[in-house]
Length: 235
Image 1 (cartoon, rainbow, N blue to C red):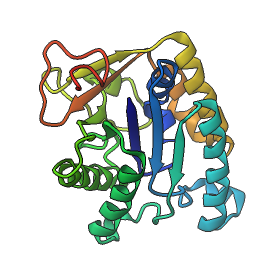
Image 2 (image 1 turned 90 degrees about the vertical axis):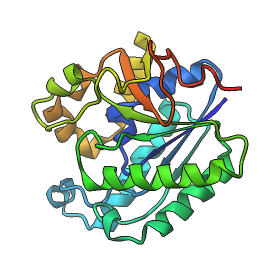
Image 3 (image 1 turned 30 degrees about the vertical axis):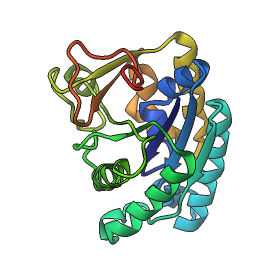
């Protein structure tokens, strides 16, 4: 099957679902990634004395390395304003997302849960515009089957001491995916591709906190007990 991950920034995938993405491609699925910005507004640019545009180009090149590490079937990196998605007409973002969906024709789409995990407004906007694009296109295209939201359990969220993170309740979680050590290794290698972001990666201790389970909510579907993958039940 085809699955499209949609995130606002470079490294969002590696902080969250890279191990799952690696597992899915190993199992023969086609895994695509869409990132809405190049992430050039990161504060790391000040330490490197770079403009937003220059920083964005560096982070884009780092993402190209991630694409190879995770053996993605395809990756698209757009150049909407990092930290500025809330200022845009949401229809512009929705149309760009629709273009990518109709190009890749995924059965499953994944983005952030409604709380965006970190609560950053770019994450919240991405959740809203992806959901809006999905519900509209699902009425027209039969290949679209499922929308899933990457989230955390309460225990996982509370392990972070760098960010204040949000989570989903046990009742809200519809899918729990268990990954192998090789998938965790791929995620760690993906994180290492972001050479200009290593200071933040170290401070967050994400490499130590990244576990072998990843949880999702599924839009308009409820599964108890949770599914073990994002494709079960899709015709």
